[in-house]
Amino acid sequence: MRVNDDILDLLREKGAEAARKAQWGVILQPGAIGDCILTLPLAAFMKEALGLGGVDILGHSEYISILPGRTCIDSISSIDSIDLHRLFVETNAFNLTDRDPLIHIFSGYAWIATFLGEPDSNFEQNLIFTANCSHSAEVITLSLKPPKTFSGHLTDFYIQHFISHSGLPLQPWQVPHGDCLIKTTEVDIARGKELLKGIRLGSGKKLVVIQPGSGGLHKCWYLDNFLAVAKKLNSEGIDVLFLLGPAELDRFSDTAIKKIGGIAKYLRDLSMEQVLELLSHANAFVGNDSGITHLAAGLGVRTLVVFGPTNPAVFRPIGPDVTVFANNTAAFAKEPSASLQSELLDVLIAE
Image (cartoon, rainbow, N blue to C red):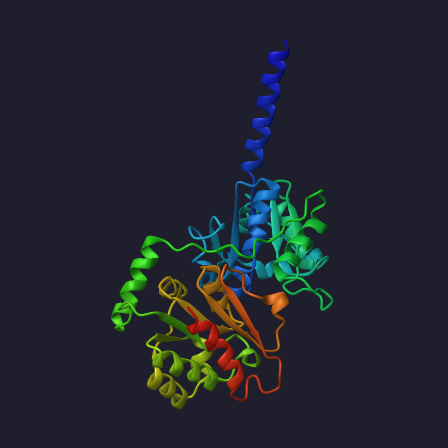
């Protein structure tokens, strides 16, 4: 009889585990690539702590398309293809039909973490109502930025905030800051090799990729600093490649771009997939506090990041080989800094 009870207990335990793994979560992340990458530890935590079968992300396609198959994110949906603006209306004016697309979008999720809306806002209340039209679901609204009094890393803040609002006795979870958040595939590596071949790089020399821009101009180290670093690397027989995205092309004059081209090769207007493919061949990456810097670090590339006004304790990239340089002075984005150039080069050129 005892044996039968043990078997029944085991079957119940297995059934409960299967039920948990059948549940999925989703994260609504409207931010850019850096925000999306810094959300990955939260997704991993949700999977592990809640025993979910998977976690999806709903965001802007140009930033999240690289995540499935390379990260803990299982699938994606485009935030631009969904009428989420409807959720911002006053709750007493919010209506859903029997077969409303919004109900269908959230019907498969037991847990919803959203960086859209505010706690107790119309958006949150309407999202809770929508999700619970088809099943019981938990909705947690998170802030994109921590309060000024928070001194830890942003990823820790996300997880602590999620735990405190979950209503469950979840254990604190230490974000593994030395892990690679993103894995490249064999296809990524092959395509990156072809991109480098097309600009006559990848001949066996060390390759340092530099991205001199950022979403905020105040976070950008003065361009001449990057150019001086590139010149020195060239003199040491190291290949340098500049990446110029929309932010750089909007801000840099034709003269500045010519200066870059006179020192090193550059590529412009690459897709996020192409940037990832190139970075899979980089020996090192140099950049500001930017999304591409977070991408490089997450891939495990040796990453040297220059912080100006933003706090590296909070926004430092996550990866196994990240070196932070901080210079929170008024001259950061306006003048060359020979001393900081020298510090950075000492690390770059050291064997």
